Length: 380
Ligand code: AMP
Image (cartoon, rainbow, N blue to C red; front, top):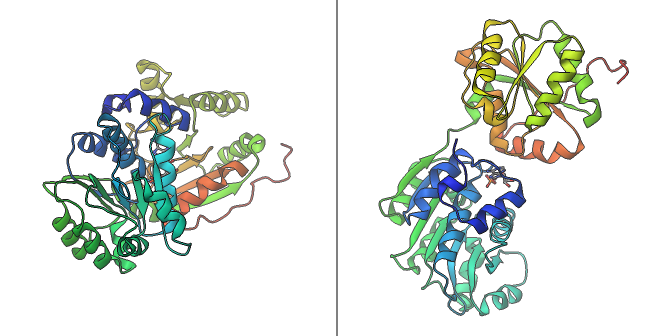
């Protein structure tokens, strides 16, 4: 299993990740971080929700910290171009959060607000400037920003930039940045125009990609049940005692949560087994064998533990907790509907998890239909 430490990140960043509650790198992070740390250009195919912001922000922060120098007046050491103000704000926020123990100056520039404050924020120079292309061009024309000493350039959501007509502004911006820079180029898709733009900007790039998610999702019949946390186990019981529910994989966010669910189900007369990081290898193998053979119909797992397992004929995936990394949701529900079969995925969502559901819907570009609580009349 890859850890952030084994990717080569320094103690200050690891501490910040602990504060964020990130324990394991996402696939795009595991792939991209070593290349960026090594100073290579990167061409990445990844959608929002895959953890791609951290995939570039973490190693960039480490490179900045390893070679501290004051930024040029009006300039930046790192320029991140983003198509929308929302995304730009999120990226700036991420740099601040991950860089909290390093001390980085981050500035944000987007249209629709007065330019004066943005220009003043740039006056002394910053480590990281996150900007939308249109507003950055305005500042370049006003000479309130200079890019000729920029060391690292990130282009995020390039295909979205194309949709918004930003390709020419991007070419104008990149023409003013030294060719000896490091460039990181991210896009969810790679149509021809984007491929051409990348080819013109990158030098011997490392290619990283995470699998597109939409295709797996389409085959699964999804639904979400809104339910308070305290009532979740009762709802799970009702779902599982329904005899149409076949071989079922139940996901929890934590190991402790997995054990609690197993205990409750066992007490309620539904045999279940769990696999997670605290189980020994023989324990995991026994649990998996019981699930495979059909001896136990219900397997409870955490995301990490579920990664390596491949069991055919899973008819249902139940998300007892929604994952905070939206891509995990796609991996989870992809455990059913294997090899062309159809599958059912039901998510239990309490109030605090609504934000997770929104990011999942954004990533998969679908709306998860709402299902009523089964057996409403049953006492909780
Ligand atoms: P992004 O694809 O960069 O928009 O990130 C999607 C979400 O995943 C953000 O809310 C991040 O805070 C979160 N995230 C990114 N990396 C991790 C990780 N390794 N573990 C947990 N959450 C993460």
